[in-house]
Image (tube, rainbow, N blue to C red):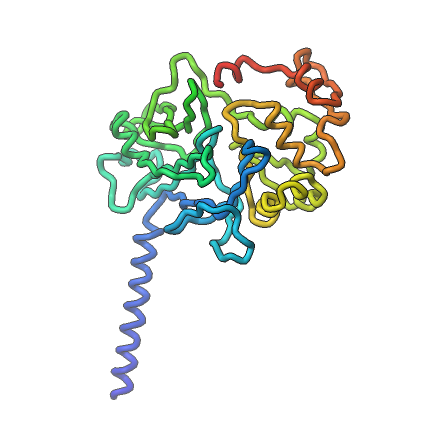
Amino acid sequence: MKKKWKFIAVLVVVLSLVGAYDAYQYFTYNRYKERNYAIEPRAYEFIANKQGLIISWKKANSQIIDSKAPDNNSGEGQAVGFGAAVYGKHFLSTDRYQFVRQFHDPDFNLKDLSWGEFWKIQVYDISTNKLSRKEYDLLEAIREYDNGYVPFATYSAYFSYDNQEYRTVELEKVGGGSGRIVLFNMATGKIEDVPKDIEIPKDKRTDIISNSTSLKTYYKEPIDNIFSSISFPNSVIKQSSDWRLKDEYPKAYDLMTKQGGQLYLLTDKTDPKLLSDIFSLLIPKDKQLFDNLTVYGNITKDGQDHVVNSYEEFISILKVTEEENDAN
């Protein structure tokens, strides 16, 4: 009889633990229909006179790493392969959020959020060596702007105007209806309207070399992405052993090839000189970037392909669009 009661007691304890675990899962994960985990720098390194910044990201915990790259065996958290950061010349931002309701749900309302719902934006000052960080409450910024709107999309684009750096935010009216794009100022944490008669251009800061010259055919796979950062697929890592980056910046090379690093080009516009300095590091050290380089007609003044052998020749044929001038 005693064995029977012991068995029942153990069963009750087990079931209680299972129930507690299910409750924990519900309140910490399963109840949220929209969710984005926080990331933070695992390690980072500036290159090319601070024209480039390489960051290896990790899932966030309670501490931000302010030091340079730790050793591989330092145990500073598992590196994650990609961080969708929106960045410019002075600021870089990431975000984290979780919501019980899905975007576009007519009952989604910032006045009636439940426990645990939030949308935070982390802004790093990349003009400082320590990447000092501030975190802003995006939902509070939206309420201050107009509490009749809610966010409805997770994609943000970079935009620069009048010496300010922004990330876009897409809003729609509570209950559905018309939407609009507004700007989150990365310096102030405030929401602003898009300037009148200004269109937000597609971010093409890396395009003039990575996609519009014959260098594009050198890489086994594309190395840039829609956020204008650069990463190395495995096929590209395999061809990188003799690159100038490895020779001149070994820590940065390690971050890119072994720790899933992302390379950010610290400019708020298309900067041919910066691009040439950075991409010169991403080729064999015994080669020159402008050595018999074909420049495609989509970025040249006369619309024709040209072969160049120096930076000066490259600049002389390069077309700068009105869009780039207006935006920057």
